[in-house]
Amino acid sequence: MAEHQAATTPPPSARLLPVAVLLWLAGIYLRIPVLVAPPLAPFISNELALTQALTGALTTLPILMLAIGAMPGSLAIARIGPRNTLALAMVIMVIGSAGRALVPDTLTLMLASAVMGFGVAMMQPALPALLPRWLEPHHLALGSAIYMNGMLMGEFISAGMTLPVLMPLFDNSWRATLLAWSLPALLVAAALYLPKREQAKPVGKVAWLPDWSNPLTLKIGLLLGLSGSMFFGLNAYMGNLLEQQGQFGKLSDALFWFNLAQVLASLIMLKMARAWVGRRSTIIVTAALSILGALGAITVTGWWSIVSATLMSLTSGILLILLVAVPPLVTISQETGRLSAGTFLVGYTLAFSIPMLGGLVADWTGDARHAILTIIAYSLLVLPWAFTLDLKHSPEADPLKAENGVR
Image (tube, rainbow, N blue to C red; front, top):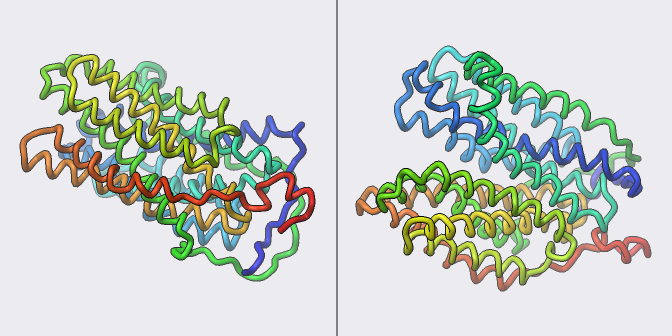
């Protein structure tokens, strides 16, 4: 197999902090551009006269693009390297995200949203592919936890700060608020070139299409679909569930704790990354707990339902980090972007389609619980794949073998 052009020497531990800051800042822009839409949606809808479907598409269209853009991201990594790909992707994301603030009509709004989602999708495989080039082997799990902490904090920050903090600062203008969230990402993209690294001369071409002969591509993708469909699905149908229970007044509190649990998950993984990442047992346990939490959310009522949903959010967040951290550990650096892109292609396609299928089932039966039952049914079908994961570390990711020159 061809070698990648970017064989590199990672920085010493003393330089981990600035690298960690950059990874975290890039991580928050995996979600802020996507999830800033829900709090701003009523204002956008009023000005541009959006239908309910188009208002929902402000969030769901970028999520679909997370799947569509994964392979172009893999191609870019193979041709120009992960750092250049990440910087390019952030610029594309800013063009789309800031472009939404300048659009005159619905069509251009949707086009800008698609461009923004495409940029975020290219960022996703670039980050894990960058880790082996910036970090020492024994810091790979921590590096994954750091940028995933940024991503999950981005979910909470965008939901929690947009309306009470940012909009009042900009005279309650949704357009200025979108610009304020988007433009600082250009500074992060420029700062990606601050860490220095040695680079070898290019050696041949690198495959970029998913390696479907590698069982991990499909298995991790299916399990990412479990985590994603659980989180996005229950988030989307929380209001319907509580309304059906006669508890709609608890929706604000439910969504607060539900999304805060993802932040807690990322903080737990910052502490436990080296102990938990790469262990099949932790993937199995967190996947099973996610299913139990979702089941509890639809079988009990009131605060117990919210507690169960919050447990699901916590464990699915941990599961997400465990799965995203696998490619840098089990593959050589030249293959990391390819494996990550393949798993994101599968995972986000399912994270978009399974909740949508659940919604169609719920519309047909008239019972909001059936949307979540559809997601649970999918999760039970793919859970056995977790028991078959082969998570043997690549020599590059094993510090002892790497020091001895084993390849």
